[in-house]
Length: 262
Ligand SMILES: C[S@@+](CC[C@H](N)C(=O)[O-])C[C@H]1O[C@@H](n2cnc3c(N)ncnc32)[C@H](O)[C@@H]1O
Image (cartoon, rainbow, N blue to C red):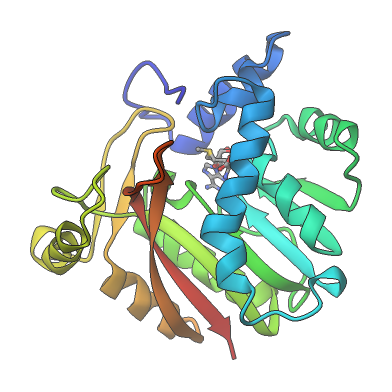
């Protein structure tokens, strides 16, 4: 995965916009591989489709009927590798991201035969989407880049505002790990999860970081409490997974929650 050269002190939004625009200026596939370190553009989209199935679709599926009539929104769509998969299962897909290169994303989605989407550039905090207008919302490898817990909490409020009553959100955010990252041991994962409270007594950790490295870790219990305060019903806890060629599933670096807007 591409990262900045040094610890970002100007605010992560400034750093991300700069690095992503640099990647977009190249004539090769740097832009499309910048967001998840895929080896080439097509691999990024294949892996995006896999991530959508593994991390989002299977969480939405038990609660959402007739997706072909529904609107889905991604916060932090990057180059659109996951949004492409979402748009193929839903009536309309909305992408919200801070970067300035949505034209490039739209061109690529169109080239892949996708036109049921809208992309917005945002300020990194607010969702430029009306109240009660979205059926499903998700975010994957984005909230770990927020520097401040206040922004995470504000996003929870924003997601709650834009979801329709009965809407579902699947959000991932950085987790504190020591023993379980890149391992396939459930025991190690449970140990890390139990230790979150001791290792992060405030419930979160704000870290100086290079662009595209982890700035924020949030414990499941803290995130659950914040989500409930925003009016969500917390349905399920998640952890990100990585699959490797021999079929072993490894634990990744993100906690997740499935949230229902009542
Ligand atoms: C590692 S990339 C992941 C992109 C996409 N979710 C994917 O999996 O391919 C992180 C993305 O989050 C976006 N991002 C960072 N901070 C953000 C913020 N405060 N609000 C919205 N998007 C943000 C970046 O511009 C970038 O596109």
